[in-house]
Length: 353
Image (cartoon, rainbow, N blue to C red; front, side, top):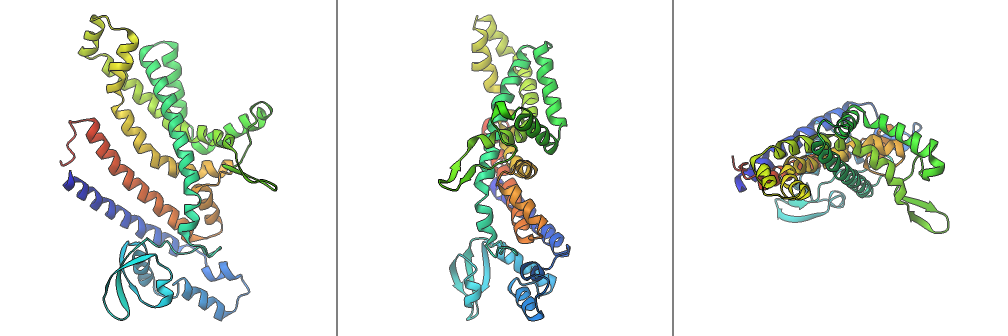
């Protein structure tokens, strides 16, 4: 188990390093000047040089990359001058010289070109909203998907089965951004007087007298849009897994003993049929966090996706890079946890293999 975790963490670090290299290369060759974006087109040369020095953009690309990796690394060597120390939240490990020290620190994602705020702070203010949206979409997809999958398996080759399978195929075939536009138009515009739902809106509405007010109904349409694709996959997984389990010998034995259909389905069949479904559900959470980008933008949901798209429009590359790296980190961690979970659910899987 320990050897397996070490191997997986090693692979994860390699993946993250590859993502860092690709992201850094991509966004350092894109057009855009931090000094111009922060100071405007009429800035003098001295101001431009000062801004480039502040963001470390006056150094060669290779040096910038090494500095960026050092900023992201939780263990690194940093300078001991006051300006450098002020950037990091760290615990000193050892003084290497009068100018350098080895520290354990929180990864530093730089600062926004536009607002000068730390990228970590910007992302942290939006990640809970995206996490809530992804969790709501996953619960919606899991509950409805397992229910439809069980019904499809029980009533195989009937209209219920065909309807469930057709719904699953439609859900997989429909892109999230297209589904979002249709759902917003139909439920918030055409049926808006009956549903009371808005075309756009975030978790909190602002009232000039009461300040921020929680508005949970704004999460309904983004949840449905984001949950359609995993729902479709869960329906198909549950159906196929249930059909396989229902054909096993112990189910026929349970029927021969006179157990009720409900007891056979929920006490015996469904419990064993859910292994692949649980694995899929666990793995989909990170995908939903990443897939929320366009959904949040369509519905005006103030989350990680909307902030990232807005930053990309403004060429605020540190924010975009930080968001991409966070999603990559989330994928690596969740994939490791899913592998471990699958090992517990299915004893035939050996984690140390």
